Amino acid sequence: QVQLVESGGGLGQAGGSLTLSCVASGSIDSINVLGWYRQAPGKQRKLVADITSGGSTSYTDSVKGRFTISRDNATNTVWLHMNSLNPEDTAVYYCYLYGWDGQRWGDYWGQGTQVTVAS
Image 1 (cartoon, rainbow, N blue to C red):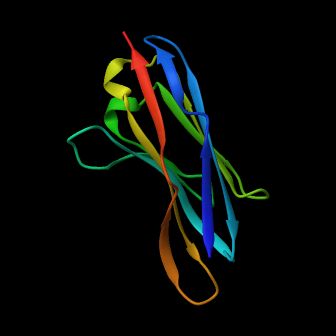
Image 2 (cartoon, rainbow, N blue to C red):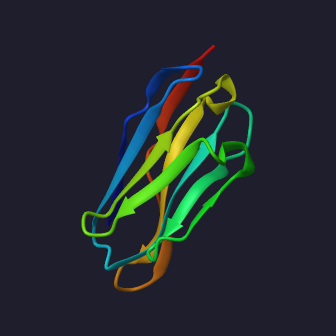
């Protein structure tokens, strides 16, 4: 079993900042990619940002220059630092992991954390 536990969501103000964190635990031997997805009401879940074990990052265009993803391989933790928030960032944010559990490579998801940005 692999568990992803997110924290840090909540209410933010337009122009403000929030930081999300996610800790992976359980029977995971190797983590390749950690990332964050988000799903707004009535919309599909989409990638926000991800980071490989080597530190390579990618961002969706709408958050470039505003959000920063980082990770600590020693503690299996990933953060999403969100600056210059706007109401369009309102969504449920999901932590994502692609890794090896000793038997297979697989995708794992957190339970999601709500981020609401007030204008």
